Amino acid sequence: MGRPVTLTVSLSLWLPLAGCATMSLNLAPERPDAPWAPATTPSGEIVAGPASLSSQPSGSNYVLPSNRNLAAALPAAFGLERHSPYTLPELIDIAQTNNPTTRNAWNDARSAALAAGIAKSAFLPMISAGIVAGDQKFHNENSALGTTLTNDVAAKGNLSVVSLQWLLFDFGERAALVDVAKQGSVISNIAFTAAHQKVIYNVSLAFYTFAAARARLASAGEALRDAEEIQTAAQHRYDQGIGTVVEVAQTRQAAA
Image (cartoon, rainbow, N blue to C red; front, top):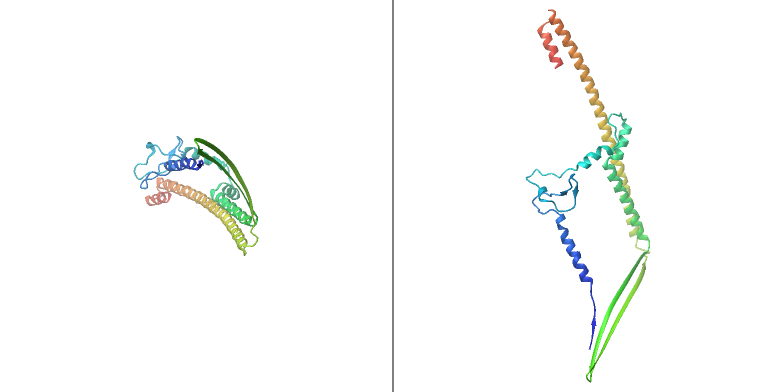
């Protein structure tokens, strides 16, 4: 009689993969009715992994931890000098360079441009290659007249396949997809320009608001000095007996 013997190893490869997937559930929040307590380093940096019992939230006032290293590094990243005067164009340039809004809008515009390039690749031919390998053993035993004949046959083989596909006509579908991707790139570029305009507007508004506040402060200081001089003069007049209490009280009220 003959019986083929076939070895299968695909099942033993999938089992550990499924186990690794379930083991990663500890990276997610443990309960749906409680806030997430992240694992942190001694400096406060959030890292992937289950949180310790000491970092579990208590009450409803829980907030995410702050990274002290980032707090110390952020002010120096802008390259600003504390006591150096800056003009409005210089402040706008610094804001456009360091503002995360412009950086995110730039990344979105680049992603849209890459999407347009991917859409164009649909006009190119597609080449695929594959290799199929097999190993089979065949065991055969024949018994006749008290004699047993055993025959073992092993066979190995592989098949290599290379295919080429090229779509030549699709009623304009690929051209339409490329056009949509290009329009999406234009929209992202417009959003990138709008992000810069918003940053310029916010910086300009803050600059002129600060300048107006400084002008109001200078005007208020000058008015205070004038009121104090008038109060001093009224007090001297009162000390000399030529002034009245009402005049002194009014100058004090103006100074206050």
